[in-house]
Length: 113
Image (cartoon, rainbow, N blue to C red; front, side):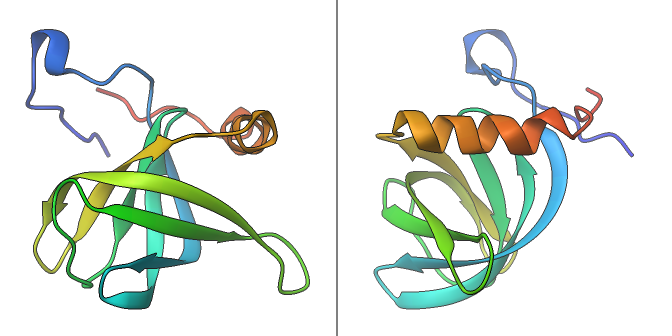
């Protein structure tokens, strides 16, 4: 299945996106909610969730590791679709967080444009 990118020129994504299905929790102004990361890139991800967010809002993403441990990421909501989900651009990634995302991506195939 192909996910079309309707943007062109410099608005297009900087990094390839990869389809995933990662159950997460996220926290924004309305509190902590459940969601699913449906695609990820080196710069961000898309979270399927009916929780309400606003473009420009900072959110925390909690990606499960093992035994109740989570990797925590900060992101900025760059686009939201009511009752579907929102796109997040990662902000202030540490070296270990970048490495964590790289390890996820290494096992995935890119989404065809």
